[in-house]
Image 1 (cartoon, helix red, strand yellow):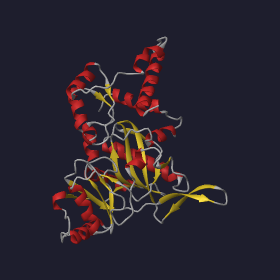
Image 2 (tube, rainbow, N blue to C red):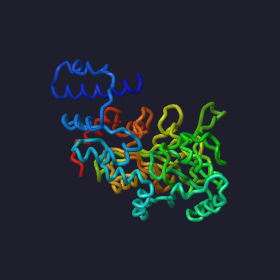
Image 3 (tube, rainbow, N blue to C red):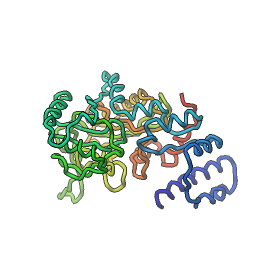
Image 4 (cartoon, helix red, strand yellow):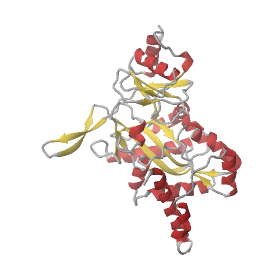
Length: 375
C-alpha cells in the first residue's frame, strides 16, 4: 500500500469497527465507497473550518512545524470552536520557542530535569565572510555557554531542521552565510566535524539559538566474527545518550511511552534518520548495554513531568539526553505535532506498551482525547 492508501485502510478499519460496535450489519459495505475516494480538492481555510464546525468533526492536525505547530492553527480552531487533536495554542507556541521552553524547564532542575544553557542572537548581529569579529563572536559564545563546541539551530522550528555542530569560527561563518543565502540544504562535511546533509528551514529564521554541544554515547552495530552475527557496541566515555519519547493522554495527566534511541551516522540526527524508513536504526527501549532499566523507568516519569509542565495535551514527542545510570534528563525540545510518517518511532513505542497499542488504536486514542473538553 502507498502511504495515502495505508492511511485510508486504517481509517476504514476504524469506521467498520465503530459500525459493528453500534450493532450495524454489513458494516464493511458502508465504508466501501471511501476506499477509493475522489481526488483531494483545494479549499480555503475559512471554508475548511466551517465544514469541520458544521459537521462536529475532529480535525486531526498532522502538520509538523510552521503554522501547524506554532499555535497559529490551534488558535484559529479554538476561536471557531472546532475540535482538534494535540495541544492548545498556548502550549504549542511555548514548545515551538526553544528558548522559552528551556526557561520553563529550569524550574524542574531539583528533580533531575535540566535545560542546556542557551543564547539567542539576531541573524543581523552575526558575522559573515571574512568579518574580523567572527573569532571573537565564537569565543564569546563558547565562554558564555561553557563549551568549546557549539550546537546551533533555529530558535523556532521543527526538529533537526538546521541543527549543526560548530567547532570553530569558520564553521560559524559558513552556517550564517548558508542561512542568509536561504539555502535549502548544507552539503555533507561543510563543517570541520563530519556530518551528512543538513536540511535548512525555509524561510530562513531571523534569529539563531546557540547551546553547548553535548557529547553523547555513540551506539554502533559491529560484526562479531566469532559468532557470525552482529552486536551493539557503545563508543565513547559519555554517560549521556540521546532519546526521543512519545507521550499520550490529556493535559495534566500525560503518559510516556518507552524511549527510543537512534543509531546516528553523525553527531546530529538527520531528518531522514528520524522519520524516513530504512535510513536509521531505532532501538525501543534502549537495551541494557546502553542504559540501565531503572534509568529508563526514571526517565519516563521525568518526561511525564515535563509534558505536564509544558501543558501538552493529546500526543507529542519529547527529545532529550538521558543519563544512562540515573535517568536524569537534559531536555532538547518538545514537538507538539510530531512528524507522522509511517516510520515514526511513536508507532514503535506504542507497540511496546502492555498490551500493545496498534496504529489504529493509537489514532483512535488521539481522537478520543480531542473529544474531551480541553482545560
